[in-house]
Length: 108
Figure 1 (cartoon, rainbow, N blue to C red):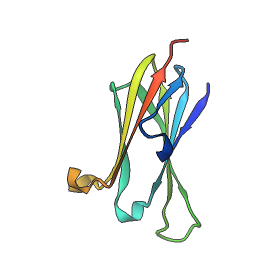
Figure 2 (figure 1 turned 60 degrees about the horizontal axis):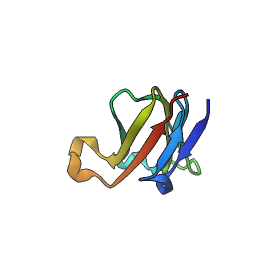
Figure 3 (figure 1 turned 135 degrees about the vertical axis):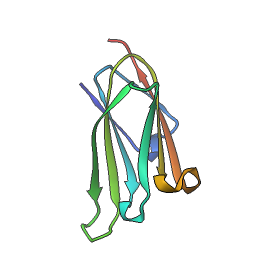
Figure 4 (figure 1 turned 45 degrees about the vertical axis):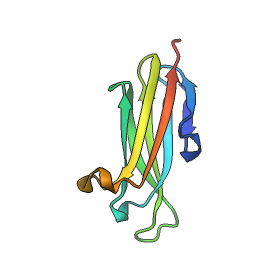
């Protein structure tokens, strides 16, 4: 199994992977502001979230860092992975940023 790493620079790009490979998305986030990344994949179930973590910068209280989301691909086909940075309790009007990735999961 391989791991492909995705960042803001990869938004709107198509990346080829194999079933069972991992897609690791790394995006800046400061959770103390209430803004968090939310991910949705289409079709549903095409990706399985395996881990969701935060790498902090400097360790100072309230400091931001990088959100790391790791997904495992499940079956061949095109998968859209859409992320938005928002305060979910405030709704769509709070969205600060969006990133879309396309994974082409190739049959073995």
